[in-house]
Image 1 (spheres, rainbow, N blue to C red):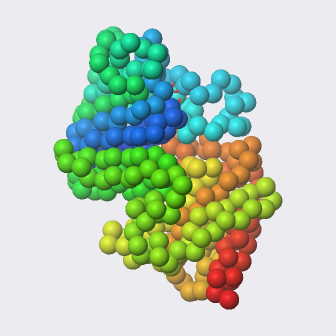
Image 2: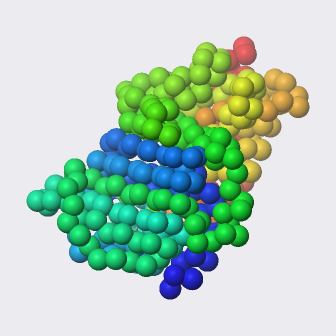
Image 3: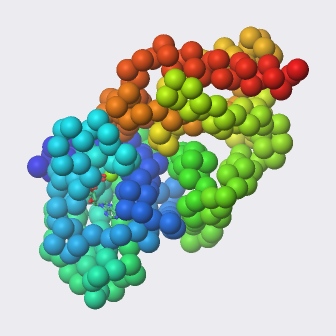
Amino acid sequence: DTLINQIAAGEVIERPASVVKELVENALDAGARRIDIDLEEGGVRLIRIRDDGSGIAPEELPLAVSRHATSKIASLDDLETVMTLGFRGEALPSIASVSRFALSSRRASDAYGSTLQVDGGRVASVAPTPHAIGTTVEVRDLFFNVPARRKFLRAERTELGHIEEWLRSLALARPDIELRVAHNGKPARRYKPDAAEPAARLLEALGEGFAEQALHIDHQGAGLRLRGWIAPPAYSRSGADQQYAYVNGRAVRDRGIAYAVKRAYQELLFHGRHPAYVLFLEIEPARVDVNVHPAKHEVRFREARLVHDFVYRTLYDALAGARA
Ligand code: ADP
Ligand code: MG
């Protein structure tokens, strides 16, 4: 089973940033309001994620690290309407099979916390431990037992950069969540929660250059809603292109959406330049398939053409209106 989990890890867990993504998504699925992320050496030496979510029952800790055990869907039909970020029950067993792993948790109804250690896939027994309400996952020495993968890890700064970039994309989607990051024992980043003013998070995540020039978008039609911001091309120091697209709150890389945005922008404004954007598309869950790839960065629309035309038309009209 450890081998199967390690193979699955190969698909979901590429680098420390993929671990952070899976663990933070679990925290969000558990209703966390605040998430603390401690990293050492770009996450290679340590990733510790603590949340104030609902917690896990002591007797369910072994289940959480076993394969295809998810508490989030009960049947295949649920896949049609899945609203949680996770649903495959693969992340924890995969991560635990390629690291020195510990899962600690306490629910509001528990008198004390419990912890479960897994060392390279070998599961120890559950032991009581003091813990605040919520869950802590500790991942040490990622890929210590898979040298072929460890070899592909990059410099500390590069791995940290990937983590920060993923967190930025999450921070944009969830201005209601407080996120704190520490690296090598020092505070590195803090996103303050402010659900009432999403533009404040925009400023925190992308800086003044984007926030000051951004055109706000909010439009509904054909059962779809597109909201967010579009701005002139980014020249950020990091070189990141500042293009963030989300479908039902999930960050995606979708060529159809990217193409529709680019076309609308280029037809009206600058030919050959790529706009920066943060765009949230909302669509009925049954009209989109999120189960295309284990890491879930991709989606498949049942009506790809309709989605493209809606995004294109919405942005074209908004940009044309702003220019007039
Ligand atoms: P999935 O998210 O696809 O269900 P995971 O392997 O990521 O699968 O997690 C397995 C299970 O462990 C989840 O279904 C959930 O019940 C539990 N779990 C994991 N992380 C947390 C957390 N931070 N808080 C509460 N429950 C959690
Ligand atoms: Mg998960």
